[in-house]
Image (cartoon, rainbow, N blue to C red; front, side, top):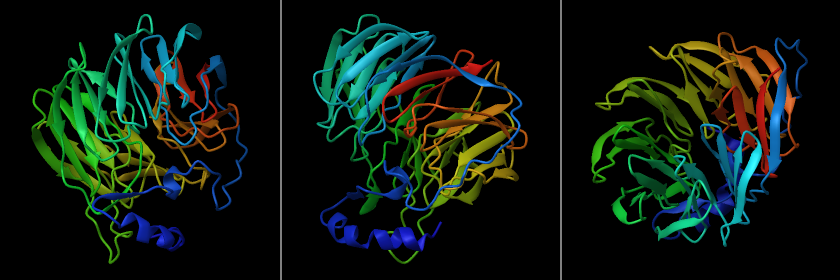
Length: 390
C-alpha cells in the first residue's frame, strides 16, 4: 500500500524517529486508539442467518494506550488492565482478581498453570494460575507490548526492541535471548510470537519470519514475507505487526505495506504469497486464509495456492481486528470486531454477513479468541464478552 495521506502525516515525526539507531513510530494510524480520521463505512442492513448472544460478560479495567489481549485455556479466561489488575474467569465466574503492583503493557499469556504479563518497564511478572499468587519476576531489555507465550516448558517474551527472551516456566531463569538486526525505522506494535512444537515463530521489521529453537534460541529457518520497496524510509516499512498462524504443516504471516505469505513449517520454504497490507493479522482453516487488510476490507485466499476467493468491503475504514475462524457451534463462520466494539460474523464460504452484536462501544484492538461454543473479546474500556449463538 502506498498511502500518500498517511505518509504526509509522518513527515514531522520522521526527524525524531531517525535520531539514533533503531527507532519506532509512536503514533501510526494502524495502531491509533483514536477514531478513524477518514469517515468509516456505515453499517449496512442485512438479514441475519443466526443470532449472537452474550453468554457472560465482565469488566477488568481499561487498556489505555496498550493492546491487552486476554488468554484462554479451557474454560478459563485470564485478562489484564493497564492499571495492573489481573483476573481469572471460569465460564464467567470470577475465580480471583489481583493487583500486579504496577502497570501492565503486554497482554496475558497462560498455559493453565502459569499466568504471565509484561510491563512498560520491561519486567515479566508470572503468577500461579490457580490462585493468582506471584510465582516469579524477570526482566527484558525494553517495554513489553505483546502478550507473553507459555509452552514447551518456557515463557517466550518479545520486548519492544524486537528481542525475544526465553525464561524457564518453573522459576523464571533466563534460557536464551534471540536478537537480529532491524531497519532504522520500524513500527511500534504489539506483535507477539507463537510456540509450535519445539520452535518459536516470530515476524520482524523488514518483512522476515523466523523460526527459533525453543531449546537454545538458534534460528532454524528464515522466510521473506515481504521485500521493502520505495524511495523513502516510510515507503520501505514492511513490518510484520501481527502474530503468524500455524495450521498443519503450514505457517502464514502478513506484513504492513507488504504481502501475505505461507511457508512450510519444517523447512521454511515459501508456498505462495500475495500483495496486501495488514497490521491487524490473519487466520486460516483447511481451505482458506483470511486477512483484515489496512483499509478494513476482509479478504479470503485459497490456502493451497493463494488465489482470491472473496472480498468483503462493507466494513471499510472501521479499524478491524484480526479475523477469527470459529469452531462448533459456529463452524463455517468468521468473526471480526471493529473500532466501535461491534462484532461481525461472516460466512467463510462467501464473506457475506451472518450476524452482528454490539459490546460497550469502545474499540476491540485485542485479538478475538476462541472459547468453548463461541468467542471472547476484550474491549479497550475493559469489557470482557463471551459470545455464542442462540
